[in-house]
Length: 175
Image 1 (cartoon, rainbow, N blue to C red):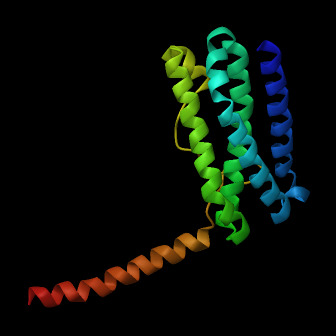
Image 2: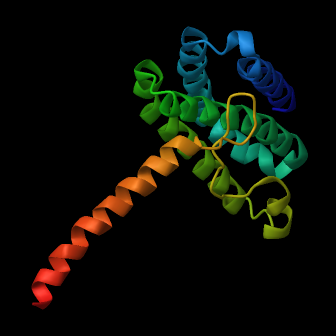
């Protein structure tokens, strides 16, 4: 089991390196991102299939399993950034992959949480490597995504126009 865990960790690190390549500006093309999402989803699905074994090994090899999950987490975060990129850049090919990728990424989160709970990893220790929260939308290079100001000002002006249209209606009701 220890040798198998070491081999699995090597695979996760190789996957991490491959997914991290999508941060390189020259590789941020739709075909590359699409391939990374499709194959990344398949890889994470295989990790999900191995979760029963990882749950077992968590009891005896906690540090190594946790390290594997940490390395996998960096890849899943980059995959989330690729999904967000497809949405913000209105890429239909990337958007088509988004639901399946999100489903798998969500499943891995809950499986890791279940593994921690079933092995009675103390919350104090679990907090060091596992935390559920809302992810910040990030660009492919890892920087935090900031929505363009033009879109916000258009939204605000359309909301203001809506308020102006509603105001006369309210006045009519009062009369």
